[in-house]
Amino acid sequence: MSNPFFRFKQFIVHQHLCAMKISTDSCLFGAWAAQHFKDGQKSLDIGAGTGLLSLMISQKHLLHIDAVEIEASCYNQLKENITLSNWKEQITPIHCNILDIHGSAVYDSIISNPPFYENQLLSDVHTVNLARHQTGLTLENLFKKVDEILRVHGLFQLLMPAFRKQECIDIASMYGFYPTRIADVKQSPRHDSFRVMFSFMKEKSNLIHEQITIKDHQNNYTEDFSALLKDYYLYL
Image (cartoon, rainbow, N blue to C red; front, top):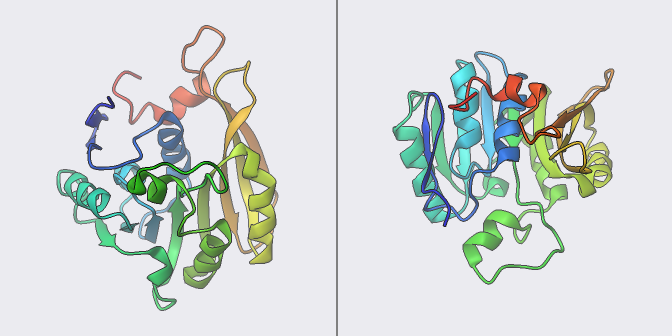
């Protein structure tokens, strides 16, 4: 059974009401992405879940985040986690389908750890399907919506499974987005990449491409991973 909460240095995330639990790669993504936000931005977290990404970003920056979650029980968990945090004035939980957000809402930065196991075996549990699969949100629909609500010089950051890397780049290009940063994520030096983290913008720039390995040959966190998570993880 998963731990009902996850304690960080400056906040606690309860997760018993959410189908998808906190994972190492989602924590890494939050820390990596938080580097690229700026104070004063109006931001959006698509598929906010427990609120992990919004909380990690708010710990680093003075900005406002709309945290959108479609699944009802997880939305209640999101509200709880935000209310218990130091940043309840910065984060607004919103219970809706992101596709229902109108183009009149414009954001400086958008982040998403979306449901991404499209075309894989569905769970018997409906809430897990909503959280994990693209039963209601395809990658193309996601980019289409981001294209509508992101400012011209805005930043869109996205976590994807590694096997969808090229597909993601191709779909992004259909909507005029170019990757400015790509980070391939490996569990260890012995493993292939299993996640990829993207930063997209509407303008071409020199692409920064990096690789982050979570554990070394001795099963300890690597220097790169520790540097990113040291302000969040209790024992780093």
